[in-house]
Length: 91
Image (cartoon, rainbow, N blue to C red; front, side, top):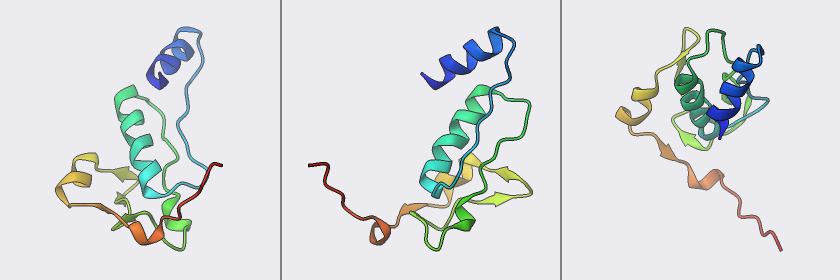
């Protein structure tokens, strides 16, 4: 659905922007995939995990020289840090 919205923006002459406010590496990895799939020609704002005291992925998302190497996410064996997850009830 997100890629459809990006296409609608482009067709209407708007520039789509992918950015995050404060996201863990888990959310940033999803946004990195969306940015990669959408072939944006502008920078995306995805270097916010370093602002957190602890991250949900161990090690944190690799942002090097303003670039996220998506294939490296899988090659380096990133794991969800379950100790940082708090269970929340929606009742």
